[in-house]
Image 1 (cartoon, rainbow, N blue to C red):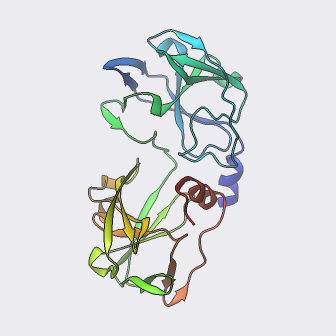
Image 2 (tube, helix red, strand yellow):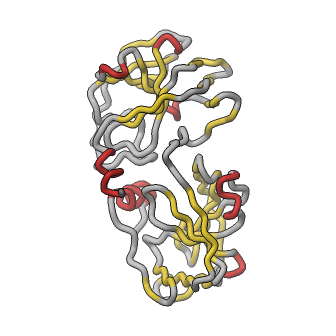
Length: 264
């Protein structure tokens, strides 16, 4: 199944949305559509919105194409201006390249929209933060009494038999432990990230390693079991489960995360 999912990344995919989508900019509603689709360009992991040009309440203008290297996987840290399919960038409300017309017969008349170019998004009356939610993305949280030990350079930084194992579509399993089971000192960093499925993450330094761990203090309903628990980058620490060292995550998504967050 993983191979099928990775194979689908090479294609342009879209899914109709049976709800109203709105985008605001400078206090005004610039986009309002009941005909929006979720769109994935080839090799882009997270969807964006595409709407008919008639549902954009401002003039569109041609924009120059961006001259940027295209990585193997377009994770959320890769800007919208990087495209992997034929089309024409357009400017919206003076925002250069905030839209993109795909040269795709199935999406004729539609404009893909740069989520980050707008101030606020809503599906119906619910705010959307980070990026549109993928209807095929799952986050499963499993309680486990199996012993989990986290080591950094041979030192135990956390050990617990009350961990939560988080399985998330296309991502490696993450291990969340109660904060009281973290032996190392956690120091807050200024970093904040947002997951549309779990909420806003606070980041922590461990033994002078910035952003080595994170937690969700007020997670979204789908991840409420993670409130206050701490997870560590599997790619930067050694994770032992049932006393056995697990291999570090590998594959296209882990490589993309390493690139985005400078995980070494």
